[in-house]
Image (cartoon, rainbow, N blue to C red):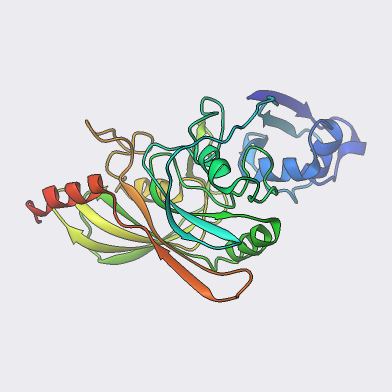
Amino acid sequence: MDEFNLSIEDSSDEGIRIDKYLASALPEKSRSYYQKAIDSGFVLVNGKQVKSKYQTKLGDEIVVSIEPVKEIDIEPEDIPIDILYEDEDLIVVNKPKGMVVHPAPGHYSGTLVNALMFHCKDSLSGINGEIRPGIVHRIDMNTTGSLLVCKNDKAHNDIAAQIKVHSVNRIYKGIVVGNFKDEEGTINAPIGRNPKDRKKMAVVPDGRDAITHFTVLEQYKGFSFVQFKLETGRTHQIRVHMAHIGHPLLGDDVYGKPVKNLQGQTLHAETIGFVQPTTKEYVEVKAPLPEYFEKLLEKHRKEIK
């Protein structure tokens, strides 16, 4: 990340929306880019996150983190993918553990996008640019399960609108550390960049609204099998929320503790439901729990609480 430090020292720069000010002060990026950067916590004003509508004040100290531009070629790769659903507009893939969704520093090949480019040829939406063709939402590298991909821009805009109003049905299952007194609950806690570690997310007062509903399915000795229903879709939302209430996901090496012979968090995107953009019919797709997950459940079921 390249870091830029700006100060509001002239009255002519006062009272301007922060996204508009940055587009003028750092014109190498667009205003929409800065809006996304602000939403993602890559812009701090006086050490705190703000919203795009924030108006600059004299004396403001602004820190902007910008990822440097890198020219790369994304190539189609003949990588097997597990297709759960496909039509002319959409494809739902069962993403395996350890696969990165789209190219990023350190992962320019072997990603789901590389595999989709081979499978779909030129039939992927281009709204999110050449690095993320078709990608309208993401799941973490070590999270498995249902991922919805758009084949054209019309479908992309339609699904993005459904996600924005929280009408896409997304249900996850995970194994967390510890047991619960209540069988269900809701975590309503804003999420933003961790002010002490910009690579991590955290529950912060000035973060974006984030709501996770959970239901405890089974409890074992020291662990619980839990279902999650997302009302919002913030980065690392389930992982951050569960760690926040003292029940990190089993194996989460970022927000919890790593587990020997377990690759990252035990989290599976089981169900995704949406309205098909052309037919307007509701479609619901489920990804079966992966084998490693089933084996863990069998092991813990021998130690029922």
